Image (tube, rainbow, N blue to C red):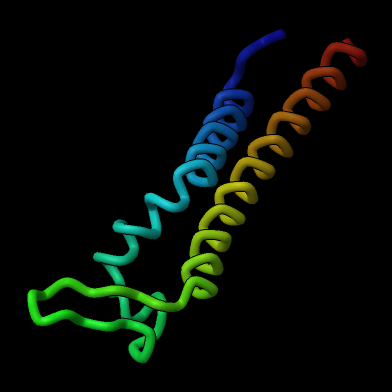
Amino acid sequence: MKFGRKNALGWALVAIGVLIAALSPQIVFPGLERLLGIETIVGKENVSYFPDGNYVFTNPGAMVRWIMTVAASGLAIAFAGVCVLFKARRSFRAIHITS
């Protein structure tokens, strides 16, 4: 089987998508937490600050929704990669059947 650009793109999308899905908790906390702010992620009313500067967020539902959204995005990217691989395989077969 020939390894062309479509195959490389497909496998790259699959790998990136799976990595995003697998690392979604680390992407959200501390990644998006620092980028967007914890108040944006869990809601301002769900953040309790301590006098020493530490904080606790008390909305596990919001945390799970953000993690699941990032994981679903990764799986969508991986699925797009599988679709690219499938189409590359079909076009490869069509070329060899007609020639």
